[in-house]
Length: 79
Image 1: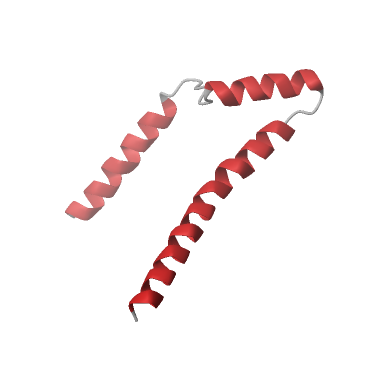
Image 2 (image 1 turned 30 degrees about the horizontal axis):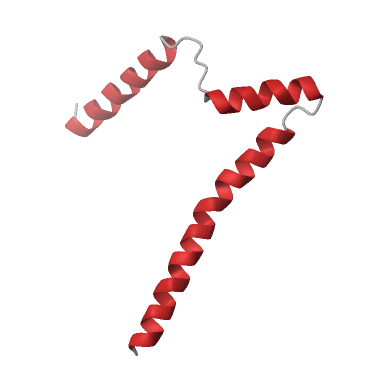
């Protein structure tokens, strides 16, 4: 067996072992859990989470736009 095929086989075996041995994992942060519980009580399940996701998603793009604008202005001044 070629070394590359052996690497693929070991990776697949390791992945299968990890998947088969996993237990139920609750990977929510405390804030997400609190918002989900409060949304469920208010009757609008998911609206608060969706707003939070949009907010978290928008911040990096706004920061990148500001940094890009700053670099563009700086390069324009140097020319």
